[in-house]
Amino acid sequence: MSVHSEIKKVTTESLRKMKFDKEKITMLTAYDYTTARMVDAGGVDSILVGDSAANVMAGHETTLPITLDQMIYHTQCVVRGVDRALIVADLPFGTYQSNPEKALESAVRMMKEGGAHAIKIEGGVEIEKSIRRIVNAGIPVMAHLGLTPQSIYQFGTYKVRAKEDQEAQKLLSDAKLVEELGCFALVLEKIPADLAAKVSESISIPTIGIGAGPHCDGQVLVYQDMVGMNQGFSPKFLRRYLDLYSQITGAVSQFVTDVKSAEFPNEKESY
Ligand code: KIV
Image (cartoon, rainbow, N blue to C red; front, side, top):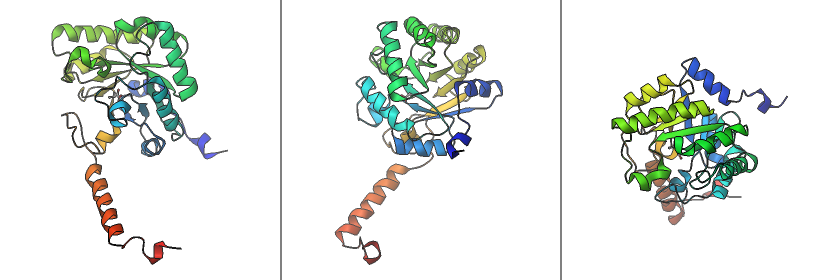
C-alpha cells in the first residue's frame, strides 16, 4: 500500500460533518505546487485556488483579468502538491454569469483539466441558474457572498458589505437560496460578525469567513497575507503569522553581500 492511500482525504462531506460536530474548518489559498505542499503538510482542511491569484501572482489591481486557462494552470500546479486537503478552485469573472451552459462548460474544464475537487463562484440569486446547472452535473459548488471581488466596479470600494438592513436581508436570503440549490459551503467575505453568525445559524451548510468574525464555521485567508509577504495590505481581519517580507528581503540582501564580497560560495560549497 502506498503512503498516499493511507491519507484520509478531506471531502465536501467531511466539511459538512465538521459543521455538525462544531469543529472549525480551515482554508488557505495556494496557487502553486511548492506552496500547496506546505499548506497541505500544515494540516489545512481545504485549499482555495482563488482568483486572488490575479492580484497576488500577477500583480493586477483586481481579480477581473485572470482567465479560465490561467486558473486551470494554477489549479493543476496545486493539485500536484496536495495529498489531503479538499481543493476548491475559483471560476473567474465572465466564465459563469452569462448563461448556465457556459457556466457548466467552465466548471467542467476546471474539474477535468484543472483537477479541482470543487469550484467556487460569486453571487446568489443573480446566478441561480448557473449554480443549479453546475450542481446538477455533479460538481460541488462553494458559494461566495458579501464582498465579492469580481463585482468591485459595482461596489466601488472594498469596505464592509451588508451593514444596511436591505443588503443584509438579501444576503441572508441568498445564503438560504445557495443552500437550497445544493451548494456544499459558503464563503462570507467582509460582512458584520453578527450577520455572519445569523447566516451560519440559519443554514446547514458550512460558512467560511474572511473578515466575517468568529462565528463562521471556518476561516479562510490568502496565504501570502497570512505569512506576511504582502506588506502593503493590512485589513483589520488579517492576522499575520510570520513576517516573511522582511525575512526574505533580508536573506536576499545577505546573498547579494556574500556574492559581491566573494564570501559565497566557499570551498565547502564547491566541487
Ligand atoms: O480568491 C480568493 O482568494 C478568495 C478568498 C478571499 C475567499 O475568494
